[in-house]
Image (cartoon, rainbow over all chains, first blue to last red; front, side, top):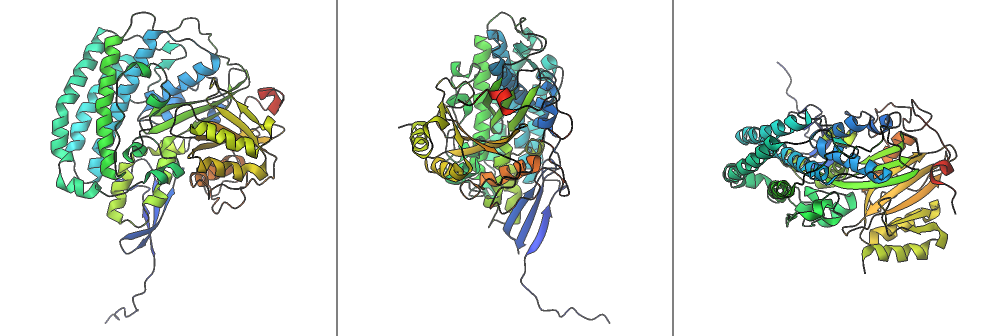
Length: 373
Length: 160
């Protein structure tokens, strides 16, 4: 007969690897958790699985050649990254952009922001066990991909912007498709709220879960919807308006408690605000050139540097470019918002339960390849 | 008083006059750039923390004659980004600021990965983005393919 295990029960910490291939973690992130029973004592995100060395690549290719890389750093808001990179180089090199191109860029960037938030919405609710809203979100997102596919030629990694404009012009079909999309998305809010926002299980799993206090957010450099969920209305589109964002009426939604529910509400409201921007931009869309034709084939910015920041779907993003006067950047550094947004988890996850960890991890909307670069 | 003026005052008290360069046009995306020495680094960042700034990122730059660390800080007000710049030579160990801004813990790990700079008193300098067994520092200009490896002056001009 097998001897019963009569070893005394000892209290000790238990290590659990959340990831790297857990179905509810996005990208390939691994969080090493130290558990005391169900409670997390220490959380250590281990990143770098998706490190591709974009910054190093930039040092051996021209400014134009880095364009496709820019939309691959964060593949969910690729067009916004592409847009920001173009703006940074244009600022450094002093390139003029026609009015029409500015509006086209803003419309496409906001469409991309909505598609990123929709994907987050779908996957987050799926993390929490609801499969249906995911399909709803992807149904809507598909329309954006069709619109952007039509004008940019790709569905995910857009390299649409060019120095001094955009790749190709938009047409009447694009405008009517975009207007139809905005109308349809607005008609879907009630479905989303009925399915998810008013769902008791969802509320119980998000309210007062993963609270990020404003002070903690500042020390860790948290930005974007996560910071706005904590009640600080910090958005680069409002604080330092770039492109033509100062010509539109839109609000910066904020939360009160900084919990997962606030972050959820902020993102849903942000989609509505993006719709407002798109509508106004379509109304104001001027005629004219979509690309400055006098931009040289090889852009050579003067010696010096620029630190250009913009608001991606996840927060304050910045390109830091150092130019030595040649057609290749001497150094390119990307400040990615997910870096700080993920690092704050080392503090936030401590003391919570494992089930909440999934909810918190989903609620901060990280894109791991963006962290890894 | 705006936070950017507060911090400008504090830095002027802390640093010599010619170390601070203010740019109202925001041309390089910063309102103020200050040249630090390693012994003033912690005091300057402590002043930033007290003034309500947050750390955006730490960037390493590699030149033939020096390495440079650039600390970009911002607060939640328009046009307030500042840059603190520190020269360091190979083998230097600049002090860690992880206890002032916890965000720096990861940024310093990243700079350590890419440039091999040891930060004094950083409790955890394990590889962050590189594999655990990486014994190379890929952002050094001597590693891999780069088109230029210049002196600091060749990019920024003479320090006045």
